[in-house]
Image 1 (cartoon, rainbow, N blue to C red):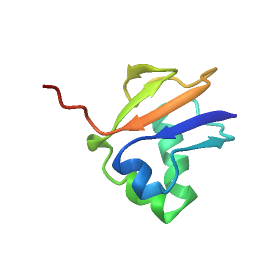
Image 2 (cartoon, rainbow, N blue to C red):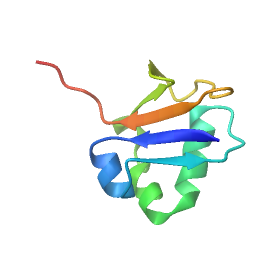
Image 3 (cartoon, one colour):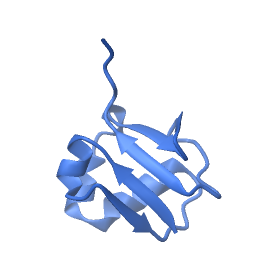
Image 4 (tube, rainbow, N blue to C red):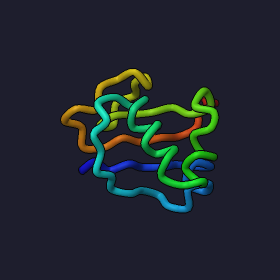
Length: 82
């Protein structure tokens, strides 16, 4: 089981701030592919991953990153600074 967290417009499109997923995915990319199949809302939220950032166990990473042994994956839009 892995906790998947959604922030900002991803949370709005999916309709939940987080969910627990039973997955066989070994990378973030594979997890996203599984999530896209879950519902139309998930497919819409992940239709353009270039507009999405990801953290695995609270560490910013790439979509090619391993999630083996991870407890949490968080998805959020790019952050703007000021």
